[in-house]
Image (tube, rainbow, N blue to C red; front, side):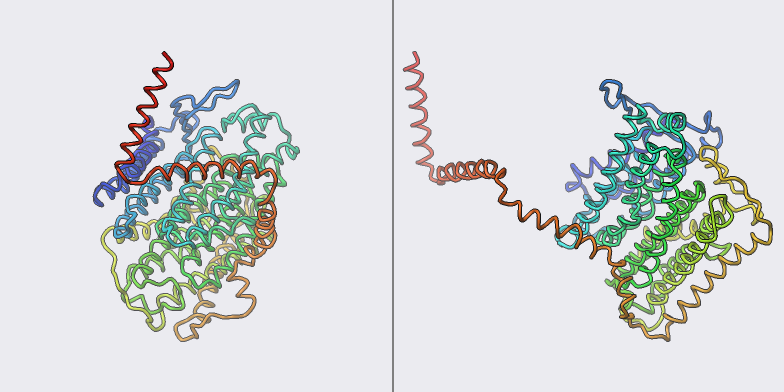
Length: 624
């Protein structure tokens, strides 16, 4: 069964190719079968592979599938090869299964869109690119998948390209992430020139053997990879593209936030964790970036009016939790939170799509009272929101977030400052989550519901609701009387943290603290945004700053965009351009001259043919 691993990539690629070439000539039913069915088959194969992997683990908990040599130049011979271990298996299960649910939802949600086949072609390629990134045996193949998800995000964010605002949002995402991709590419060159290989496992082994902890070369390599990670995962200072990415269709937002794109940076750091342990200063920087991003994004989420932008800033904040865990060396905790986050964030985005489709509105302050007419969407928001906020002992998000908070306090690299920041982030998460639910579903109803959900949408939401509730029990901590099965599985390839004995009293206090901030956030949300309170958004300067994402766009516009535009205008008359412009003018003149010959009068065409024939015969006669 493990030999079928290549099909998990090949099937979505084949479907994307067929839809791109022939989609306009296919019926919507066939497009739906190809688009959603291909990812469904990939998910089914992944489940079977996972079952075989768990039942009969390969040697070293690693399976490598060599397909062919990509290229060979000197000593550089990268392969098209896939690497399956517990980390990539977890990622693969989430990408394919959650991706399939989003595709199933899209069959109904996008049914009336004129670009139906084009949408599924992009989505299939998106999933295939992420799978390539996850399974890549070498960093060059990983980079191919990395750029693939970047391309697909550009295509999907700007899917409705007739609106210039959507095109600008797509271009912004593409350009901002180029900064990180450039750093990543330089990092690959550095690793190859110093280690002589881009095979991930071989490179990590050589780095551990050749580079000392804290060496300048290890620090530089880790810093360059971190540059790529912060851009792809929308962390400070390159987080500005993600809120604007909400311009794309809602299923696209769900796929970007839950199963692809923004999780790529988390996976990259976890996969190359050896480099970061060799560069403690950069690993500490990862924790700092995650902590600051988590808090700033949570405050911004608290001020947003647009439902999807609340969820976008929420994703930035939750990825910040993952970066915090990675920076503390809690690798398995970061991957655990990645998994639970995929469940409840996909659920929230798809539920938001139901609401937006039903009332044709995204402004929370124009909604209200929708819980009676949109019952499934309401309960999806309650379950997904509770998982996001960390409802104790019931939701998946509690277990993964509590593990990170526990490690930030009691772990060998934790301290009171990280723990306090994490708890503050948890409080803000509860506050902005229930603010969103109260504004959308309680109070007087202001909008009429125009559409209801069909079977495909309902199935997707119900399955994700179930996963958001029970998904955390795969890694129940020992202080809850459970077994951390997922952590033990991941720790077979990721270095586990040193076991910390904090005592039952401290364990109880950490759980009570997490429970307290959840309840406090819920109470404050009801107090400030409850159905009997004013529904007008505040206009104070601080909230305006939060609404604007702390002014990063304004700052970058002043420091980067405007100076670049000024330089471009000033260099428009550069002497170097004269010959190039001259060549263009010659081409234009030639085109205009040839255009004069196209009169549309047959007699002139016949006369031209006759004269041309006579000239050719004359030349041939003279040549003899």
